[in-house]
Image 1 (cartoon, rainbow, N blue to C red):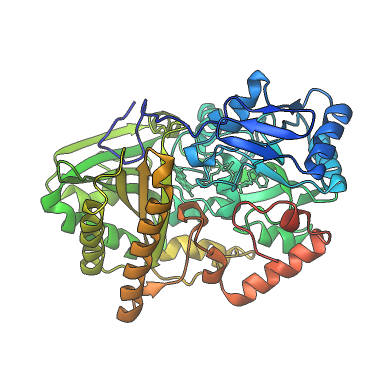
Image 2: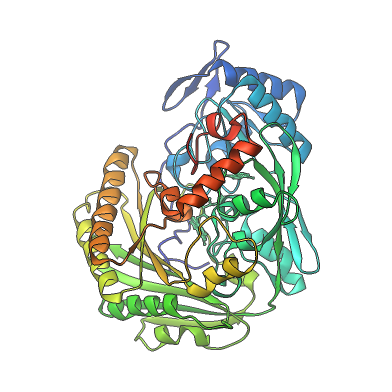
Length: 511
Ligand SMILES: Cc1cc2nc3c(=O)[nH]c(=O)nc-3n(C[C@H](O)[C@H](O)[C@H](O)COP(=O)(O)OP(=O)(O)OC[C@H]3O[C@@H](n4cnc5c(N)ncnc54)[C@H](O)[C@@H]3O)c2cc1C
């Protein structure tokens, strides 16, 4: 198990007190009592929970039962996302997903859907006093010759483990416990984007249940419009019950873990910019997790690189820009994707977390000023209990975008083949009383620095749903014609608006 300081996200064993809906119970009069207050269950949800219990026996979990906490708390990464549904339905089959959606929409009940539970804000994947549909039981894996069928109840480590005996990998998440469905529906940053595109670009078939309960198979040839829309269009169209993903032969990967002290952060950020700019016709698949952590008490900052490259190369050649920087730690290895992913845990119920980010053209000097501004701003909130601030960067290389440009399908991002850097503040803290302060701090800082980048002419409006805060609207960063097309497709497949008026959480297209 890797521990700090390798990445700001690896806090194994650290968990703060949850916001507390553990002891929820439902009264005869429809009052849902939780340890944080009493909720009135609306008629729609009461109707849905009663019918679900009667018509799909064995799938419904009610407040007060032992599995309720497992489903509504233990499966969430951000403690803020713990909520208290009126009931949880955990379908065992596509048919049960379809039945559940029919019942929920006939009752007019509000609902939320959860896969791996990593989207980090309240309501994106859970609901108070409505119905939670949890995908945990749809967890089958079927490895085919050059693809793999995966259920939405799986995390990426389970998928990589299933592929391991075949010496193959797929394009999914970089860390162990991130869920398959959420990541695949919003894009999917993986180590190998530069060669194979994003997770969404690698899906060849979606099994989908629409708002009216109809089950369809969505491929390039059937429902081509919806096939495109699901490539980045999030949870606006239905519930995916199976993804079929391309796989690639890759029995070995080369890895590098490097840690840099504060003196070398300018070179570290410069190497990240160079990685974004790298643009060759036949790239070697390679990518990273790059995180700076900062301790506002000790005033110590350090940058970390977790790099992975296809094939055996020790040290991995594609990280030479980092390898030439003096490091306080450098470990190179040749291993398998499963072994690597195994070490990168992001424990559930880790802390309260706010994500915020913006995107820019790679400019190492400006990126360094953003880093410095972030550190100075962290000092101003040093009194926040359990403060855990990290500065995370993700790269979008031209070759990663080219995959969708040339595969005859595209994706909803509609990016140009130009290098971009996503700079993100991922900030953890302990107490609910600091929620408003932390959201405001993160939002205001991000927008101030983005405003400067706009003036410098190096900003991009692209916002990635996986790194965004709840205050951000990723659709504003997509080409307007793509958003219009998404809305048209949504109207065609969900004319009753089940996924827009009964389910509000996550990144929605809006009414
Ligand atoms: C620690 C950490 C590391 C991360 N690392 C990466 C990374 O390496 N690469 C990357 O791209 N992103 C990363 N992310 C972001 C991540 O991709 C998103 O949080 C993603 O939503 C997680 O997927 P999930 O299934 O766990 O999400 P959930 O929280 O379960 O769901 C996310 C959204 O998808 C919807 N949804 C879930 N299942 C379905 C379904 N079957 N059908 C329709 N809608 C559904 C939910 O309603 C919700 O709105 C990371 C996030 C965290 C917290």
